Structure formats: structure tokens, C-alpha cells
Length: 262
Image 1 (tube, rainbow, N blue to C red):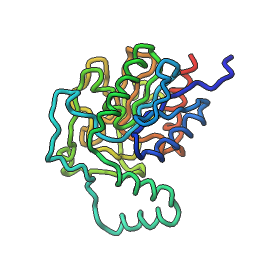
Image 2: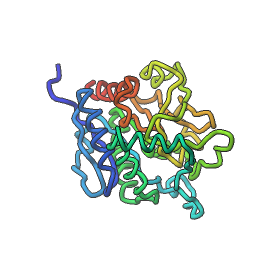
Image 3: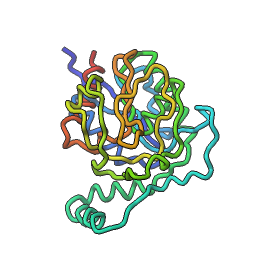
Image 4: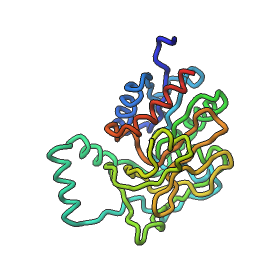
């Protein structure tokens, strides 16, 4: 039996992203893995030593990689709604969840512009991970990058999907998503109707051929993808690292670590 924890690479931005790193590191550690941080400013050069890979969230993928030009008219600021309920949520966060409140502030400060260095670094790590057939989990931007790498495209701005359906943008699990019960992800989550957080303004458009859509939200936006051609290749549009209290979300990391051991 293997005594050492499998080594899981976790990618992120060169600046910022500290909260996401620590939550992902904890999620991996709780399931028996050992996480190492990979950024454009700190690349440990372990591309061929990793047992698994997590592609984290952050800046938009450069649209040049999927044959488009950057939409200069795109305003990535989330749509927010005013009202008593949001005021209650903010007060609730300040009083009982100061950490979550700080995380929300950190997200607001993040740049949604492209990051060329990060794109190149992550595509390099993803290419080697796919070649070596080690498990890969894409989170938010990471899921989008998987689709782009395999030949798909992205919506640069998904606000047009939201008319009667609210545009949820929250670190709290407030968005309802339907998951395919026959998918690998559906088996891990143990349910088909879930509630997740939402911190993205882009999403998968044209799906790469090796991938399958396994979850959507009410508006039709793709929320999860996976591939049966690899031992474990899963991309989720939400952030499971911020929902450690939900067993199904923990199982995603458990499956990644277990596959990394094999």
C-alpha cells in the first residue's frame, strides 16, 4: 500500500488567488493528497512528477486560443440585485462569516483580463497531464481551459443568457444545477439537483469532441463537463473548494486523489 500522499498540482494566478489556493490545498489534504502550488511566478517544475492536476479559477482564457478576438465591449462586472435580502446576506456574512466576506472582496478585486503567462503555463501542464493520463480537475476557468485545449470554444460573456432567469454571482451556494445521473460526476455527487456557487462570467460554448456535457443550469449554461476517454477528466463551472461542508463536493476531490494513487 502506498504510504506517501499523492502529489497534486494546483494552478493559479501569479498575483492573488491566495484564498482559493488554501481552500483547494485543504480539500486535497482532507482526501489524502498533498498539494503543490503552480503559478507563472512560482513554477516548481514538477510537470512530470505530479500524480494529479487541479486547474484553478481566475482570469479569462485568451480567446486567441479558440479563434476569437478579445471582446473589448465585455464588462466582466457581475450583475447584482439590490434589496433587503441581499442586505441580510451581507450582514450575515459580516457577523458570522468574516472569512467568506473577505473572500468576496478578494474576488471583486481580481482582474478578468487575459493572462498570457498563465495560459501558456497551464496549457503546458494540462498537455503533459493528458499525455500521462493522470487525473485532472478543472475548476471554473480550469473547466473552460480543458474545453479550449481539446478544441472547443467559449462564450466570452454569458449575461445574454439571463432574462427571466437571475444572473447569480455569489460565493454562497445559490445557483441550482441539474446533473446527469448517469455521469461520473453524478455518481460522485450522489444527486442530480444541486445548489452551487457561481463566480464566472464566461462558459463553454462549442464543446470539444472528447467531452460530454454532464450538468447545466436553468438558463442552459453548461456547468460541468467530463470525458470517458481519460481515467479522470472533469471540469466544473463552480468552486467546490469553497463548499467543504457539502459531502458531494468533497467527493470530487476524493475521486481525484484516489485516481492519483492508481
